[in-house]
Image (cartoon, rainbow, N blue to C red; front, side):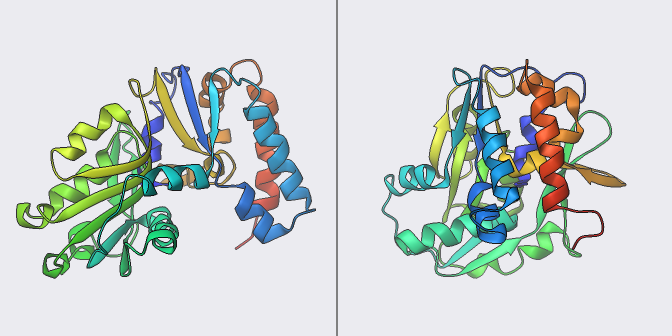
Length: 267
């Protein structure tokens, strides 16, 4: 679960049905690589995405390739002296983009995530033993800095990281993301330039929302202070808002896939 995607949902009981709902397919290739082309797990992924796509007028499934193509088309850039990947997702995106462009030869990950604060909101917390400021130590020595995430939704994650940097460092920083809500971009652009692969128009939550397909089935999509993480299918009120009319079918598919991908007692 990318750090900012948790912002794609409102507190329990208040999640609206977005007019346009984007589901990033980060499951198909991963499950094919891990479980094989003819595996029951991949068959379940295909069934899940087919069910998700059923509301074709409202739900759009995004692929990595099309988002990378969109971002690369907005280049070019000289290689950055240092790249900060936000979490494993940002680190992975930086690697994928570097393979195409050569922009990010040196990537350093910061481990942060959004966590429900128990009061209907979210806060950014470190998932490493060290706080965010300590993870960013030394970046001021970089002649140029890139900040890479997969999703910018509310912008809380990227803004928090940028605001942790000094104005002098921000002046030589450029942010990148595969996908974002267009209305969020100005709050980031006020701190540094940002280049997205895909920008969706509309207000967050009620007009446009994003999730990762992996978050539907893998625990960690929802992080709660002092409680175990959850997958989205374990919040049925959100699923019913996102997939009205066939949420129960999708929840059942997610549960079956979860038991294959994250079995009890598994690593």
